[in-house]
Amino acid sequence: MSYYIAPSFINKLSLHITKNFLDIPGVRVPLILGIHGRKGEGKSFQCDLVFERMGIEVTLISGGELESPDAGDPARLIRLRYRETAELIKVRGKMCVLMINDLDAGAGRFDEGTQYTVNTQLVNATLMNIADNPTNVQLPGSYDDNPLHRVPIIVTGNDFSTLYAPLIRDGRMEKFYWEPDRDDKVGIVGGIFSDDGLSERELTQFVDTFIHQSIDFFSAVRSRVYDEQILRFIHDVGVEHVSQRVVNSLEGAPKFPKPNFNLARLIEIGNQMVGEQQRVQNSRLVEEYNRGALRHHANFIPQTVAETPNGSNYVVTPVTPVNTVTPVTTVTTETPVTTTYVYQKALETPATTTYEYQKAPVTSTYLSLEIQEKIRNILSRGYKIGLEHVDERRFRTGSWTSCPIGEINGEWDAISNLQSRLAECRGEYVRLVGIDPKDKRRVIEAIIQRPNGNGDGNG
Image (cartoon, rainbow, N blue to C red):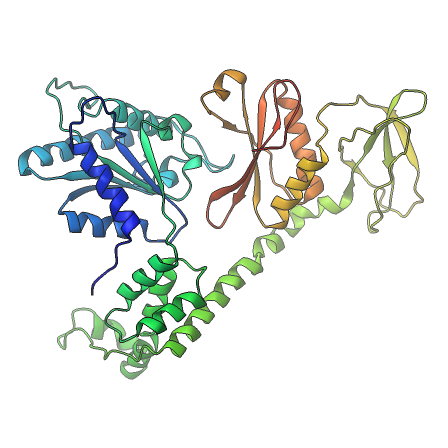
């Protein structure tokens, strides 16, 4: 089976590796190449194909190895694997690289629910130190003054905006966003089905039918073509005898003839898989499971802070029955109305609408209509809402910190939570973040508060 390597991919990877093995006077070459993009697009597999083509040996680290119950172990592991790879270059006299798969999964921070540990900090700091001093990488507790050979580092991930900003800055990491275009997809899918007798026209039609699917989708379709034969085999030998027939069988492993890879059958299987994807996205069973927790949202109503004609600020509470839905009543005055949201238990018995006045200060954390529209846009598309803050000093280095905002169960809930957090983060930059829970990537970023108290609503 001959696999396809995208020209842009092999050009970028081979250029980065070669530059790190050259001594170009006066040129500073980033040690790390970060390959990021959507899930399932074959980033790691394309890397393997390039390494095989160039005859490069690879030392692998998984993002799952970047956490440990013992503080400092992941950072030590990175240093140890780097030194081992440098020794391989010296001993074998050939190109070698260090590759870290899914770096953002092990060292990134997606929202306030992701714990930021000592190991996460040390991993980021270690990679930054190696990128700055690639020939002087020491193990804790020992020192070797002999310079090491420079080892290019390749990292893959889905969303590098979740990583520590100083790590991914230019000079330390070169970024490459991998998104195969139509021609790349046709070439890659052609390599997957190269032995299955599909014509170029059929391959092109197959890709165009599912043009928005990732590369692993087409590989999964090919795997499913064999399901009928395998299921027939299970029924023939009997479910209770499958283990004896497959594992350590004297008859050897079962053989299956090549099925018919006709285009109509592939499209039928592909449509079935797309339907399964939609059912996963539409089921949202977690909302049903948490219905009891969400019920409080129906039992609480917002309050409006308005300025009365005599200049005093009062909280105006429309008191409505619990089991009815009425529009929020507002107070119209000649002066602008500043709105905050305070939850108060509604009456449990039907009552006519009345207004209860009590003194309340007017806050300056009002969300503009533009920001409220952004919130509605994030929620309507099924994305999660996050909030980050940073002071003026750290803003210059991009060192944002996640701000816990609790569970968001609707637009009112989001606006109320955000206004509360804005009040707590006065004098700081505050950024609204929209996160795609499916791809684990940020889709929206907007600064909604600045130290002077203003938010421009622009990311």
